[in-house]
Length: 209
Image (spheres, one colour):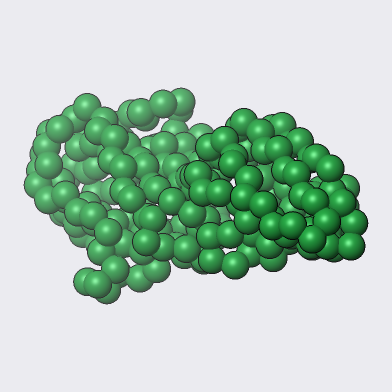
């Protein structure tokens, strides 16, 4: 997971400043099933590359039974999160799929497509901007029969476009430049390099000594 672009931060003693950032793209899930269906996911019925073909690479997930359920691990959503994936009918028989967040209650249904027949992979994008914190995504196959449906290239990304609210005290922090850092190490590196704590509050970050 890589941060693209860079962020320049300047904080002066006793001052509060708004800092503009480039768009930061954080990929928090990327799954193409190249090594099969992840063992850490909860899976009831989806098969590893059973019939059909992939959208990209050599692997995909395959469902052909009513109620096949594939659940991601728990993921930490940031701001402006979105889900994308590719799916298709194996041979053109009518297929149905539902996508949920956290559980399969009706109120948590994010998206559905019933009786689709396209055999070319279609890309689906779902806005998850109303969700933050820890969540799971659930894919449910809803069709029975001798043929099935294909699922591939699942991505979940968060986009940070807001200003960052920075506060400094006790000591001046001149400038910090970040380029292409691993996202899961960003806060740790920032803290160690500058001896400051990072506290998330809603869509802002307060940084202080």
